[in-house]
Image (cartoon, rainbow, N blue to C red):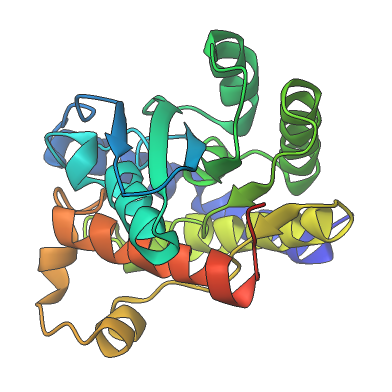
Length: 258
């Protein structure tokens, strides 16, 4: 049992009516943006080798906030990976806005048509927090997702991106940032423990903050520039996030491709 979650859930019970009202106000004020178009691509380099990358997840992986995936996380990550390795990268996105880990496993994995993958990237956590999934259920769903991907691609590295930085979202009230933001951090702790017991599975557990990114990537933008609708990333954030995640895999995680 996760004691931090248990105490947090007890403390949040009296706040549920206020969270409900806050949620209604947020849904009515945040514009409904479409998912990005063109969910696959090829970054060509003068190389005899090619890496096949699959990217799975929720709305951020689905590219909500940008017109095409080439401008979002997936296309930028593929380009950065190709540049760093000087290798051609083929990429494909399987993602839907609003999906939890369980929904990705049940609804998206059956749609995968690729027979080979050299890297699988997963971006989840936000919807599991907003649907108030327990840490136990989240860990179980994530474990099953890993296991079913392993059945499809036995030797392929699997990498989870950072959990969504809900406490940074300008569209959310302080109450939502506190309750859901704390929950998503607890889910991240569970994911970190799960990944530690698995071979060739990685999780970037760095907590994203606008200030941290601005300093690390030498960006001088206003905080609102990092969001397309107050919730989802802007083109600026998608590209900064993708480059940062690529750096993590190749350097901090020391991921190598044979």
